[in-house]
Image 1 (spheres, rainbow, N blue to C red):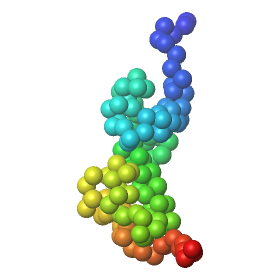
Image 2: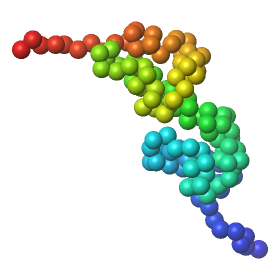
Image 3: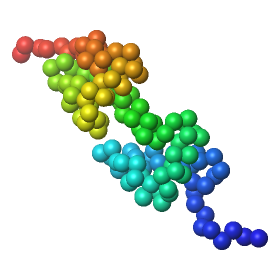
Image 4: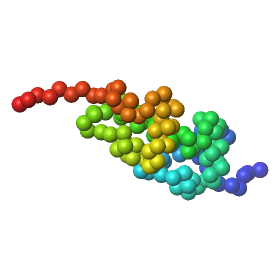
Amino acid sequence: LLDPSPIHPWRDGTGSNLFRRAIELYEDLGNHPRLGTLCLRLNVRPRTLEAAFQRCAGISPLRFFTMRRLNRARGLLRKGDLEECSVTQIALNHGFTELGRVAGNYQTRFGERPSETLKRHPRTTLRIPF
């Protein structure tokens, strides 16, 4: 007996295809899209996306993408130039608007405040006077 429902490439039984596709779409859309936008574009219900992330990453999609953005922000802070970047600008560029909350999440995750990371890892530049 044939299943009359359409074949969806993310229905592999584990959610791994949906998980990968959601990450790709998140990156492709840029500007930190909302989860509702991802669900609409992937043609899935929020609960389906949630289940795929729980199976594949052990956390919700919101937590996954927040942690991903925090890790990227940390990378920039670690190689940042004290004269050319600020914690605020990096946070805003990564879609964080509640700066106090992101600082708290950052400290919980990495054991230091974002400003401490920036100060501890300043990029050294050689300035030639001529």
